[in-house]
Amino acid sequence: MSNDRKQPHFTELVWESTEQNVPIPPRNSPEPALPKSSSKNNGKTNSTPEPSLQLQLWDTEMETPEPVTTTEGQFVTRAKELVEKTEDSALFVPFKSYWPTYGHMTGTQSRWYFYWRNEVRQGRYLKTDLSYIFLHVYELINGVGWTDPNDGYRQLNLIWEAYRESYKRLDQYLGGWIADFSFVHHLDVPLSIIVARSRGLAGDLAELELMRGLTAAPEQLTFAVLTAMSDYDISKSKFYIGEGKEALEQYIPQVVALINAYVTRKHGSNLVEMFPPGPAVMRERYLFRSAVYDISLYGYSVLIPVVRISKSPPLRSLITRLFRLTENKLRELMGYRGRLKGINVDADMDDLITRFLKREYLKETQEDKGPTVVIDPEKLERLQSDSEIVRTMLTVENMDRQDYEASELEATIGEIDPIQDSKEELLPVEVIEEAQAVSIGSEAEQFANALSPLQREALLALLDENGSQALLKLAAANGTMSELLIDEINEIAMDILGDLIIEEEDIVEEYISMLRNI
Image 1 (cartoon, rainbow, N blue to C red):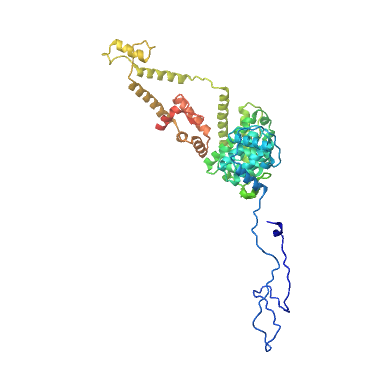
Image 2: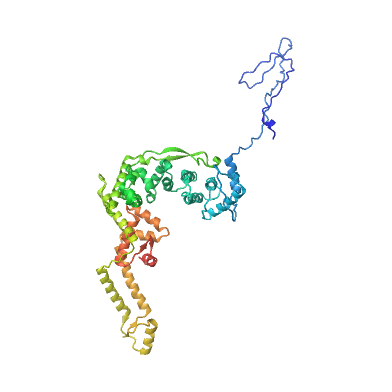
């Protein structure tokens, strides 16, 4: 199409009529103006009007507008064309571009990019330049390279984790972009890692993650997110700066989750419901800032309801006290001199936290040191007595089989146990198995009777396919922690069965059938 057709056209009018005094119709009149007749007929105006002239001042020929294309739209179109392109091998070529696209790369750079991208998709994160990384990230946030949004989210996080140590700038951008990705695709994913890695985004994102954690997923609360709720700047604590950092970051979230479960069980409302914050505020969030992003995909921005949960004074006060109380308990357990003053919490909470931290910290310390052998004299005596009973059941004098020849008896004993030189005869296999079943059955019955209803439910939960998650929910609903339940059950198992029955939140295989029976 020529440029002339896009310019406005003017029409030259030549007035050749001799008509004069043509009236102008009113602005809102639908009727055309009628010219006055220049001749008269018996003093009356001619009733036959002359046809009016219709003037066209502009050339209004309609043209179909061309679609508006943008650089970002062209990038996405090209990305879809190249989504499956790979290279079997290529040499690394440096590449630096402020907003990298395919057109910015040379042929050798393109070959390296498609080779490297294929390696990344296979989980092999080769050393490369930052511009190659950003180019691949642009593809993912524009919907290229995945079919399920959860897979796109996963790929973005893996790239961030693989290269953030080499390129600190990734923390500046990827946290916000991954958050935007989760918003536009309505993904129910934790934002705690994003908040921890991207301090500049901690505002709204920290509030969203706090709300999600304290209402739907207390077990996923993290230390970095919870610091937004505390008036106590723990980063200035000498204990935190020194030997207590790892323990505090590990146990403070667990303590908050424990108290949330305790409050829920005791009062029927979780912490957020007990100390309700203000109403949600709609916040406009601009999507994928500073990225090559086609706004025709998901729009220019999204509105996010943000509850300022960190601004709730009573809830903030409680979290602050839990921070300080946990530090005091860990100081005591780790033999650190000095305590924080002025911590007031409910006595039941204090006792619950004390028992939890003592159990968990001592257990972890013991695991780090390795297993120790502790001999309980009473258990040892009981085991010896049990062994004598079983041996008596399994070996008896040859009273009922006198018709056997001595040679046949010796041959039978030799086949079963070549080392044995006594003249005792083993019972038939059926009798042995029955005796063992009676013994195991008796222990299983004792074990079952020793369990509380909650501990029974915990074992049933662990027998399911998603046992760990089921146990977490069960513990939270009953105001305790899954680790405490497991320890209690294992203590009972050691006393009665002489063995652990749960290892790393899994039922030990040899006890599965027994548990299903009881």
